[in-house]
Image (cartoon, rainbow, N blue to C red; front, side):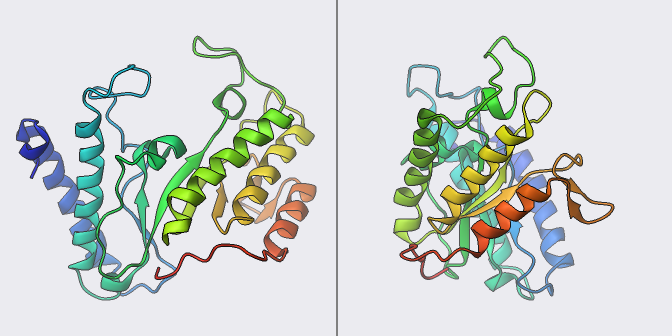
Length: 252
């Protein structure tokens, strides 16, 4: 399978053997869980910059890099569907290339074949990274402390339009499995503006945005409450608002 992409098979075969073994155990262990359990093929590991990266100025190696991700995703679907219990019909998350919007919307990324037709594509949203990630200047960018200009909003809407055109309009649901931003160098108002804008842009198109927080930045896990009551209210209003004309991704 791997040789068709022009690579030596040893490393790929070794990694795929481990990958297969892991998923055989996971699917067996959780076979009888209901539809509240969704399995995802991988996380942000699905990119191969040693083969190709977007900044190289060349397409050399691009087919091979995308080929790896496409093959892994297909193997994941096949493994889950061939297992027992609820797995043949379980909803699955298919990781996009680097879970990046632009790279996943590229035609080189292909959704796997799935006879059950119960899957969604998974991307993450930390755009712009100078705002979402940086808390101080770095060698690759200057930390951005505000968000919400007309240009910022246009970029967000354009990114969501890409996902809609590439996936939703073709019957593939979209889950933004992570989105968020650092808070140390920003005001609460700026953070709230960004988080609600992304949620609004996603929800209005029928996508599911999931706020990423593992450190108590936005959510108090010990007491099961949001730390910013205004943000909580804003997100609840977005989720509850009517979404007339939202595209319904059918068949999944």
